[in-house]
Image (cartoon, rainbow, N blue to C red; front, top):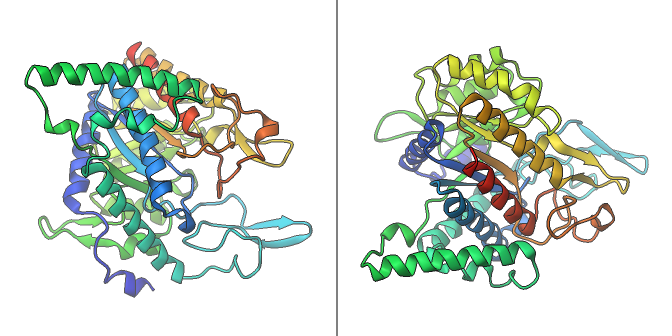
Length: 416
């Protein structure tokens, strides 16, 4: 299967990866803000126009809120078209006395709790490639074919405004954007930038067999690029300095992210920079911190201080999801929206205190009205979780919660 994948065309072009690296350099320098979001784990049966459009629409709405309300250029990156693999804490799962291998994402095995579904199947790597290709194809069509035109700012909200406080708040902002566009048009300005949107893809580079098979020599420069996505990151569980994931990332020219949990030391952070960004190139390296709301204010300052003192220019991004997961009495894995918010606040407070730039947010979200995280403007209670708990792995923010978060982040950014 790997030999077959090695013959497949690239999913992204190396030049697009360079473009994202330039955009991430602006984030690292404090001139832009990263909005990175999408599914916890994509699934093959959700590769439909409806699912993809709903996710993209949510990210476009969040981007509009952040750009307009925070007056900052927003770099939009989806956790999309490749997020099919999940690291797991335990190798097996037991239900009603039956023990089976853990579900590791659609790229490895099946979600159904049956012996047959949980057997790893290399054919799934090919399905992952084709699902990613289909997703990227549609995303490109949406982002360049008129759907992402800023004049559609109301249309993205039509199905949402009547029922939701965050939808109504967004509609008010959309009217202001509309007025600004009409004013510019009346002045004779109609910039091309409003008609399309730059949108990049990213995922965790977990299955190195797949990532290596899609690593190619760029014909322009002779350098290696992982052409499975524009940006890839290394997860909290696989960031050991002597492991293959760090070694792989050191060889490719894509923008790279590393998830840093509360156990990360400043010395480790500096070693990652030496290994992955020896040239100290802004835009090359993004630290995605996932500390937990109760730890971010204590653990993050030393990392930021020592990295800044080293002279490296990395992008600092908060992942307020992964450090705040707990199990509800019903057995559902969930997150409190207030904890998510508190971690983002703590992240901003640390950067404000140190005079450094809070570079962005990395969130697990969906465009669907799921009930997976508790709280938010349309209050979801623990007893509601069973109603639409659809995630294949971790709980995601729904569309309303995602928009609430975007408004709150815009306010925090303005107050920096």
